[in-house]
Length: 159
Image (cartoon, rainbow, N blue to C red):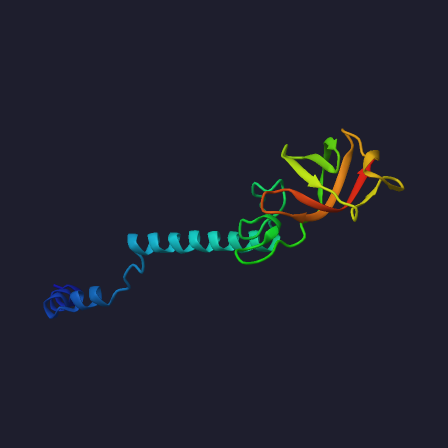
């Protein structure tokens, strides 16, 4: 028997093998760690997308004739607030009936536009409401009412 074989039984008898196995590095992950890591990555991606949409996304439109809204009320008003001036509305004139214009927006919604003596109407030059014809493209600037109609401050017809 040589010296090496004499030492090996002594090591196992002393429990050195068990101590070395206990001190050996263990796997730092298991299924729970992997699932948790994937969940954190998905949540981070989702929250990053939400922030990106808030910063650079488009405004949503409700059933207010294509006007961007805040709080679900026409003109962006929330409960207890008065309607703020609406954004410009662009579309094709469907009908001019007295002091009312019916404008079809790009998404197919027909917006009722009320005009009064203070409404400015212009084409290439300052015009009257009677100069606006069905089929013309127009831009309306005014405030939206609760029923979705718009009181026009100006109507610009594009020939």
